[in-house]
Image (tube, rainbow, N blue to C red; front, side, top):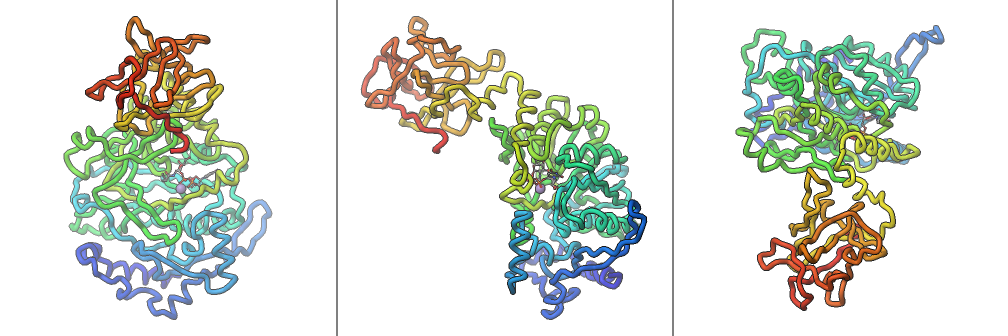
Length: 554
Ligand code: LR7
Ligand code: MN
């Protein structure tokens, strides 16, 4: 091990990321590496078990424990794609079991070094940005339930190796009542070699939200940084930068510094890195491009979504390296000032297992005087997966429950949008969008003072909930407790409170696709400039042709 470490350090000295970037044809397979030969690679790419002796305090005796350990291999270095086919039935079983448990390719992860080198994916400008000298320190909190050994270790090593020691107060690993034995004593024993790593085990399944609250309680850093248990902080920390008085100081901004610098600017700034993708199958490190990144958004059904930077934000920012304001965050990776987190009341401890806490915290931040930003010069990789094992294996619907808590807590007058779009609605018949021949849609015009806004507009069709109407059995076009009504003497089309037996609220679709109001006999029409809605005498004209599109089928 010791030898391997030394070799690794030596090998690192050869690595020149500048050289790598400039020459895309650079072949890292030619690099002299540990275990370079095909024989070595085959031998070393097989996981081996190591034996350790630990003292079990409760049983008051020494135990011999094995844990899967991964030697250094050349596979996956610099975030390169790894494709490995099982060579026999035992390996096939290993691969299948890994996939079934984690929904990522544990078989591959177990054959990549837990300390692999990574390409520097930042914008070149990031390297020369200036920042304050005295950055606050941070406690890195990583919670996990049944994480794979190698992904967990890779996360921990990437933090240890790529965070300047004076900025890393500690790493707190919160084991959320995992079933795997190797995450108990063996993990404690393994982590005991690192002064800065603390491991705690919950005594019942808490879920990621309360597990993080436990981590926060135990932490002492000025700021808190959260990571999922399958991350890799981007780029290598070179010790010489901090230990020697090396004046080669053009690279003081690694993953953590830009985050801490921004939090130090303003205690109410909560920041996230750009989250790069570690492929769930090949463990390749992908990035959407150096300058491009997405911000966080959400749908009215309270699903987290990625979105492009708004025009306003594009105009507000003057350089690519500046922080970008983000409406929401994905939830797993962020840095926050400890006092500010307490000031806004931490997480909602009533939230279970998984989901919703990311939007809850995002709303909490924006509504409590804070800002949420993405820092483009900080990048961290995360293993994205298509199926979430925690939800799949859990009875009940914690995600829905958590979402209801956040809706009831923060959405006030807008919460009907959530209930409307998730179908918690009496006598739901059909969800439709009302579209005309110019592909424009009928939409409610939001009115903050008097929600829901009672005006209607014609807008470009999109998946905005304000465009979705429910067709009820009794011919209503309804949005929550409001129905579309035509008031002839005022010539007004409005969304007003639904009333039984009110013919002015009845609508039918004619054979030639007009939407006809029963009481007035008039038809819904688009004005000639295509902007306004009117009610006209029914005629066979394109302006009066509409279709009801079943929203759920689109
Ligand atoms: O009961 C649980 N106990 C836990 O400790 C369930 C989960 N966990 C741990 C788990 O081991 C992992 O470390 O919590 C962490 C997050 O769970 P994941 O990795 O299964 O979640 P995810 O990556 O699919 O989900 C994203 O949304 C979650 C909503 O609750 C959390 O906020 C995650 O932190 C978040 N991850 C990210 O933001 C990374 C970027 C992904 C995106 C988009
Ligand atoms: Mn995750």
